[in-house]
Image (cartoon, rainbow, N blue to C red; front, side, top):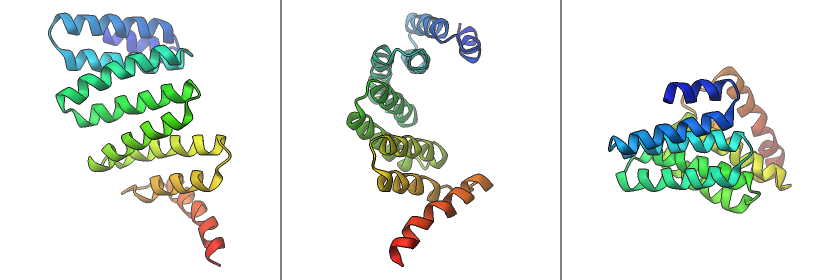
Length: 171
């Protein structure tokens, strides 16, 4: 079922993918595998958001978050919180989305998941840009890029570009 859901997602059939992820989650629940069921709920959340259903996406992300929190699975908890943040952003609840992304970022920082954290900080940066807060946007983007242990050429160029506003302010 998971493979079918993943294939539907890859084809851009998000509603179908969400239905298949839900069915996979039910199968895992019946098999008494709550963590895998939560993983499917998390995947369902992403598919629903891509399909434009942010409210249902939020419900799935909340469900996954609760399971991962109870289990102490910090990495999947962080990802579920990130999915929750994206759903909140899709609902135009930007302040709540920023708080959720920050929570996700802190967990990823503790886990030393630098690449994932950079992605989360970029999401916060985009929200700040939409809110007309460019300095906060640049700061978030810079923090994300600064902490990458092995930045790509593109990331190194971005890092140098992001340093310009701070150099200009310092004189």
